[in-house]
Length: 451
Image 1 (cartoon, rainbow, N blue to C red):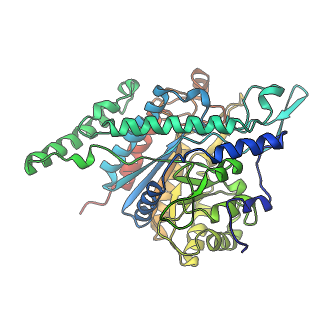
Image 2 (cartoon, rainbow, N blue to C red):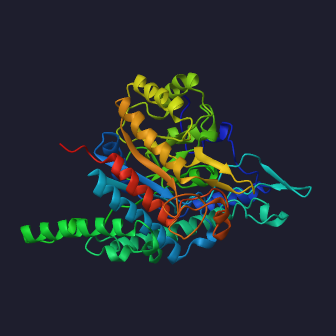
Image 3 (spheres, rainbow, N blue to C red):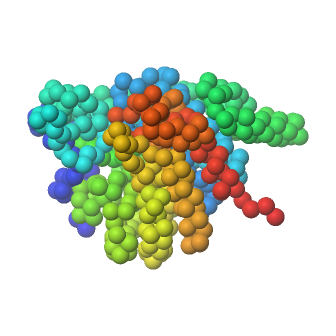
């Protein structure tokens, strides 16, 4: 391999990158971004890496979730609070059911870029650049909105910083204190058919906490706050590389735009720019693996990918997020597990049951069925168990808002209900109620066997 630098990716094919019309403006914007303070710290990144190593060994469980694509307009206190609440509620359910500590990683504070199947979009005979996410351009279909603007990277950085600052303030202020789970309440959870079950879990944990404190005579202060980490797809390489730095008293380079970046399957070419960039950063990293890679091709691809990105078998370094779909997971996942085992190295396996189960309604609305999502998760649990492997986490596209984008769940949302509250600009998300129900159902499946 050639020597790695934070810009060595520029000599490789870079897929799903916008074409900026003004190269001088792009250079100026990235230079300004490179002078900004980091968004996260190297010691936070190293702490997460250790926790991910524990998840790979079955001692913890990763809950990763958030928006398919954040929008600048939703960088508001209420939206951020509701995202944090639903992830905290889901983690509470998973801790209760699995008896494992949960790693909370949000798909936010940077999930502003999205790959597109086609670089151009045509409507009524007019052709314009596709919408690549708010960090690149705007969704409105007109020439000014769709023109890629490098200065939007600065706006994305600012909103990521605002989001992180608010989350840290909430957590440091006791928002996630298990002594006060009422802080986490979402008003509309009261209307969920599973509301009573959730409140039973909260009360059970509260009673256990009070018993421990009464018995010991001291406050269990260590669980008055929780760790919280951020993740996003490291798609827009000018942005990611501008925030990649050396840090004092540590070796190597860290991408300080997020704790846990990942590569999508569409940009995971072994000789391409994204793999080249990711091989040199010290962050824990993830790769999405989908059905586009045939089972017969998995051993060679996975072997070379692991050699490139995970040569030293560093604990917690590499995660594979498999996203096959409910109907195809049985065909593909065993080959992936065996290919990793053949490398002799340890990775964390995580199931993304969202992307492989996307469909369109008769009216052309993109959606996902709750039952398909659950079926893929249950299949993943069973396949890992039969292969003597560990499913160490789940990856959801979800929101704490009262949207109607996925069908099914306890309320039985149908295709006709989607128009009532469909707000996503890209992919459909589980709403607050569906996400909490999903956590309850998988916690039951992952519960340790009773003697």
